[in-house]
Structure formats: C-alpha cells, structure tokens
Length: 341
Image (cartoon, rainbow, N blue to C red; front, side):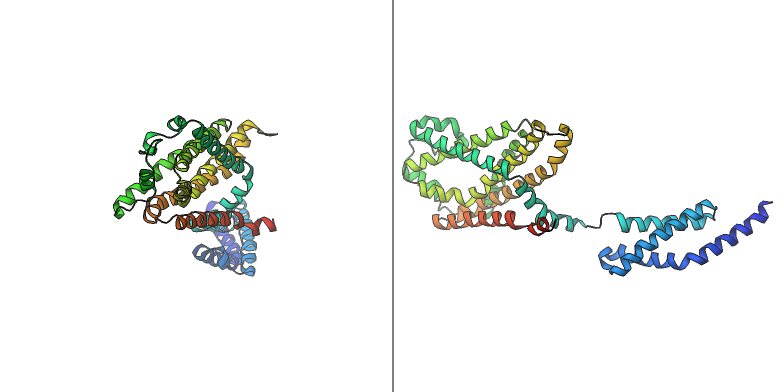
C-alpha cells in the first residue's frame, strides 16, 4: 500500500482516537492548571480523585497512541499533558515557606527529643566541668590562668579588687547602638566557632566533643569561683544567666549533634557505618541549626540586653524566662504528629 493511501487513514484514526478521549484530556488539563496555580490543596476531594483517574486514562491513551503510531502532534500533546499531571500528582507540593514552618514546628523539636540522651550527657559534662573548675580554683587560684584565656578575663583575675570586679558586671557607661552592635557581632562569631568546632569534633568517636564541652565547664567554674570569692557570686549568676542560659544550652546542643554522628560511627549496630551515619545525619543537622539559632539569640542578648539592664533580678528573670520558652517549644511542639503516628 502506498504512503499516500496510508496518511489519510492514519489521520482519520488519530481524529477518531482524539474525539473519543479529548473531553477527558481537557478536563485533566483544567484540573492541572488549577493545581499548578494554587496547589493540589485547592482541589476538592472529588476533583483530586478525578485528577488521579484522568491521569491514569491519559497515560493509557499515550501508551495506545505510541503503539499504533499516531501523528506526532497528538503524541507531543499527550506527552506534555501526562508530564504535567505527573508533577502535580507525585512531585513534592510544599513551598519553601512550608518546609521552614515544618522544620520549626516539628522537625527540630522532635529531633531534640530523640536526642535526649546525648543532650543530657552534654549538659552533665558541662556541669561536671564547672563543679571541678570551681573546686580547683578554690584550692589553688593559679588554676584560673589555665582555664580562662587572657582575652576573656579582661582584667578579671585573682587579686583584682572587688570594686573592679563589680564594675565589670554593672557597666553604667553610655553605649551607643553601633558599639553594642559590634560587640554582639563579635560574640556571635566567637560562640559560633566554638559550637561548630564542638559539633565537628563529635564525628571522631564523640570523645573530643565532650572534652571541649567539659573544658568550657572548667572555664565557667573558675570564673564563678573568682567572683564568689569576692562576694559577687549572686551578681555574676545574674550576669551570666541573661545570656548564658541560651548560650550554654546552644553549646550542649551542638555537642549532642556531634555525638549523634560520633555514636553512629562508633556503634553502628546491625548496619554499616555509612548507613548509620546517613540515618543519624538528619537529626544531627537539625540540632546544629537549633544551636546556631540559640547562638544568634545569645549574642543579641549579650550584646544589647546585658549591657542595658543593670538589675540582677531582671537579668535572672529574662535569662531563665527565655530558657523556659526554648524548653516549652522543644518539649511541646510536634507532639500531635507523634501521638497520631
């Protein structure tokens, strides 16, 4: 049979094939267009069910059209229609905003609760370091120089007068916004480096992370011992609390995130170390994100509020009040999903 006789027959067959099914294709195209513009959630239950059914029919039509060699224009149309329907039905529908909201309302709090043991160990490690640093300082003040760097000490060293130590806690000098902003920026940079270092060290069998966290506790204990010996323990506690509740918690959270990775390498269980590390990574990353957020908050508090607020009781209320809000978010957010799952 000549090609001139075949072409009219193929054209007629394509026309009949299209006429019989075109109504469903147009309906599918309309539903896809709406879903692309406003999301799949904009469709009713009946429309979503129709979309799935029409998508299957369109795929079947595409398969038949390919098998009987329909004209190229029809094949191209069905290819494009089915591709768009696939993206609407199967592609992730969450926007960036939705992903961020989900991270903060469920992802981070649930990751912290799943990491309760390494988190508890991180806090206990810092607390033990603080107790030991305090006791060692009382026994021999020279230990202070081993734990506290000269830059951090800033003249607050054994032998300093009570008046000078008090002046470092209650600074009544006028500070403009620019000076406080620079100070906050410096503190954020410094604290972030510490947290990242602690987190990164965790992969080496977790031990170095806990050592660095313990060292931070030693420094804190020696620092507290210096002021307590001068009769300023309560005032220092308030001075530290306003930002330290958030800042020290951030360091413990970073330690727990590093420990998650280290424990996956050290104790992989019944899977390979690579697989164990892959499974531990999502929670560890969420903990590091939380640590970063807490460090930003701590730097702002330390750079601004602590310099402005000069009343110990107010410092205590702000510091522990903010700590209570962090705890409430971590303990309560995302509970509904855990209950229903």
